Image (tube, rainbow, N blue to C red; front, side, top):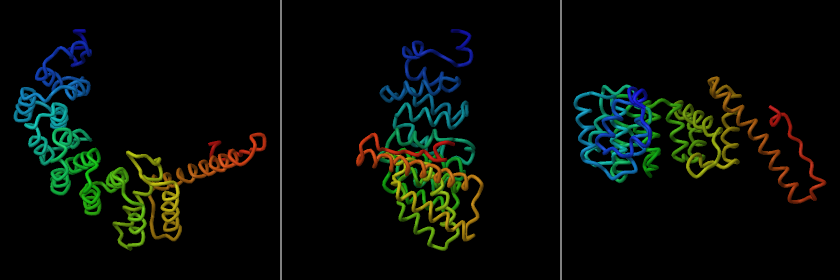
Length: 278
């Protein structure tokens, strides 16, 4: 056990008996920060733990993204402004999806407007994209429009923005209107949205498109490509081909299900076709 502790690895039994501030100290320097974060999230907010994190932020003794993530796990209101400062810091180079959702965990009622402001004003792309992750977790009613403005203005990577818009429930009619707008940025963003949405199943938490809506959008994108109005990238062609194979498989399964309802079992004919054999 001592050998593992040298590298910041601890067992659950070792961690559960520690106070929250001591847990934070170990998470700041060790490899078990995620396990410790999950443990802190199940406890009541701790002022002592929040003060340890504030000292670490002022003393630059740990990565900003790690401190921001742990602020969210601790959940004390003292960390709210500190997390906003981390996202707005010009020195932030990599935050992943750790810091933005931390703001939501501390105070979901305030987080929407602040995340939208950070998405618009943060000096680094890392800060803006991490704020977008927070909006995705929050599912704020104005998050979609804030994300759209950021994607069209180039404040976030276009592909990343498209993924966030699909996860935030962008309407298929809106995407179809972008294809007809004649504006280069909107047409390119629409293609990214369709390519990502083509790979997502309909679900309550993710893509909200039905099978028919997805097919209409993919068909429109293919027509624009065939006419030479859009020059797709290799991964976009791959995504659209994936949708073609997936749609072929789903159509055959649908036909088989209809036969199952209408015919006796011994008369059902199911031909898998090339899509299912790949």
